[in-house]
Amino acid sequence: ETVSALGDGDVHRFNYPDEDSPCLLIKTGQACPGGVGPDADIVAYSALCSHQGCPLSYDVEGRVLQCHCHFSIFDPELNGQMICGQATASQPRILLAYDAETDSIAAVGVEGLIYGRQANLL
Image 1 (cartoon, rainbow, N blue to C red):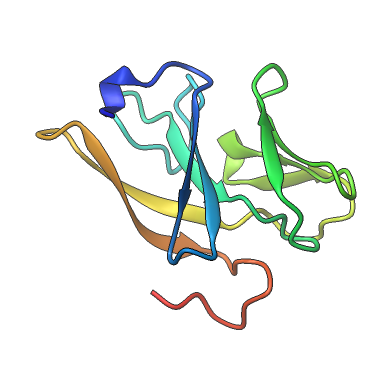
Image 2: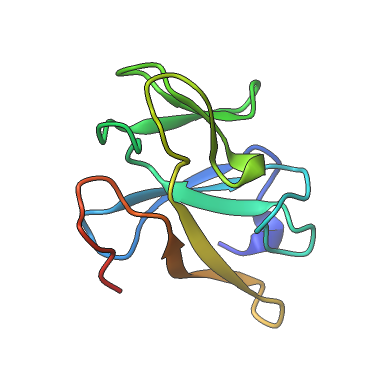
């Protein structure tokens, strides 16, 4: 799928930097820090909550990442900043690179420590 095929609020799951690391790619529909693509509105985060590793989901209406285990909420439009809940750290951000020629995005790094790891091995 190409970047231009993504609609506002679309979420795609992928694994990075390895198969044990689920991630969420989100087209927020609004330019944001670290956003890539023609509109700088595509971001990605680890799908494991920084609090205790529970799975996160994206609430399209609220435009937030939610953990349903302990009710932490993160803002994907502000670098995964923790808004409320039990988490004490922002959500680890997956660094993305956009290739305008192929209209594609690739994960190229991680900012922050993925839950349960001593290091992000890339």
